[in-house]
Every structure is written in structure tokens, then in C-alpha cells.
Image 1: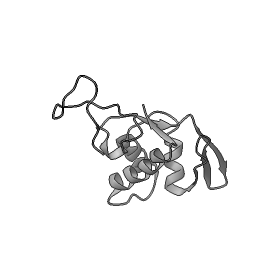
Image 2: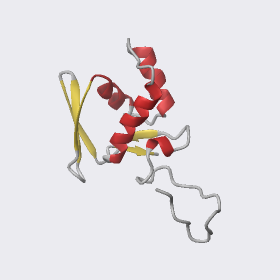
Image 3: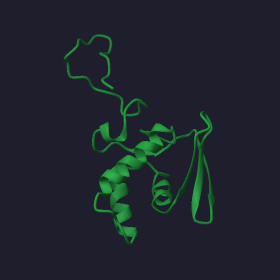
Length: 118
């Protein structure tokens, strides 16, 4: 989705955007944008994972394995690269396309309102 010009801008001008705006995906955010759990997200841990619900929308996720590890990392503001580095340092396996996989996963959480850019 291409953002419409802001007041005072004309089409074709370089537009800055708010990285916390929900219409943008994680992959569209510039490098270095910090991500964190949404205040609307409530979670409950179970033996090998976590259940998460967006209280505003009722969207529900159940995460295990790497998804659970990423959720734990998102307890504090972090970047995609910091997530990747943490997973590389603390997990025994990392997919060859780790960056793409992490971005896609975190983007699904952001689209569900469970993660926000700050």
C-alpha cells in the first residue's frame, strides 16, 4: 500500500512514515526499527510454549519452539537483527533463510496487533 501524501506534501515528494503505523509490514520498516510486544497482547506460558491473544481483536496465536523464543526476546524493544543474533547464539539450529523467516513471522504478529514498532 502506497501512503497518501501528508498535509503540505505533494505527490512525488519523498515521504517519511511513522514506523509504528499498522499499515506497514516489518519488511517495509527501515533497518534498526525497534519492535516490542503490543500492550494489547496478553499471554500465558505453558510447558513448551505460549498462548497469546490480542484483547482488542480476539486474535489468538499459540507459539512453540522458535516462535516462543522470539516472543521471549520481544519482551524488550529489539530489532530484527538483534532477534537473529540472539537466536543464532542461543539455539542449535538456524534456517539458511533466517532473516526472511524471522521477518515473516514477526510481520504476522504485527499484522495481528501482537507486536508494535516503537
